[in-house]
Image 1: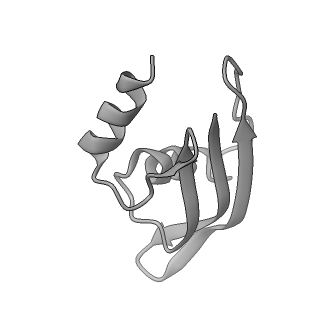
Image 2: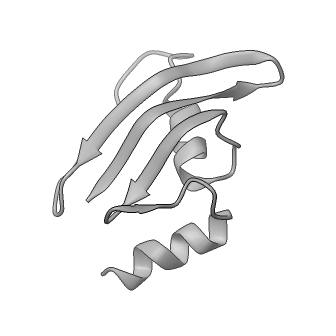
Length: 81
């Protein structure tokens, strides 16, 4: 299971994501839809760790991964498959 709770991030001093929550059960599929500038890419960057999160939690199989470096997050995801 993958879950984000209250994720916040942005660029410079500009906050783009404000308290985003999402839960994806095992074998679940999610599509992010929205217009230009709504934060889809920003959310994916926060989840992958390429953009620092300013708040909230990112969990995979119940383990907090929001503090892990991007390549460690990838290893965590691959190990569970």
